[in-house]
Length: 320
Image 1: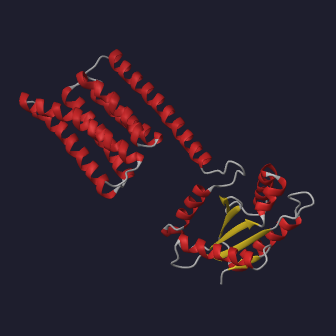
Image 2: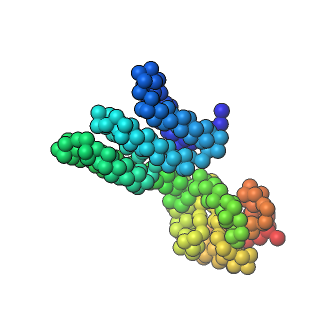
Image 3: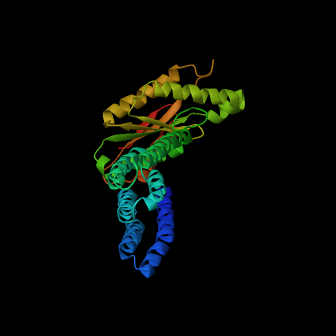
């Protein structure tokens, strides 16, 4: 079975619950001869089944979520129109479900339109007091659902952000680097000039052995602060592992990348990251080649880092 996203799983669960809860009513209404309401129930079931199959095959969750919410709402309104206010309680779970599969703003917009249609349907079938009670409770449910959904989305974004930061240096971690590479290799970004820098602090094991890991950690923190002060906001600095870091420089040509790498190397060499002990960095640089994958690109830059190490360290090597 193919791995499914969280959004797909939620949509499948809501679809299954809808089918299990609506289909029995459709069957009972057929047996009772209430064919109009039965047709509405079965139409909802068939539409949800179709949406679930569509998602299963295409994995296009956004389109399916919007269609499912619209079908839920139209089916609910059709049922109320045919049966009247006696089944208005179905409106509540229908509107709440929208916030589980759509962005909060989208769900609120569709529910607002549905609520206006519901008022038009029921205004001549309910007393003003009863209709006002229904409208007020639905407005409150939508407001509470919107606040909860919006807050949950903000917390989710914050958690994702924290999960992509290196706990020591505060720069992006390997997960963040992989996401940046995925974005960079999307078709719409294929023509963007980009350079990859792989940086490694020279003899860093000696620093840890000689001065202790606490000092070594401070060196890493200061090193990252130094690099971040020089690169642009559109570039990315990531800790790849240990004392190895990666910079993704966007919209940069080879000459500019070489100048930047040399500047970074000289900056590290001239900065006292440890008092009375020189700390230097070796850098490998590679430009993204047409038709090249992210792994091959990284391997070329890493090979240049290895060459810089072999040639005496504290130097820059750029892939041809």
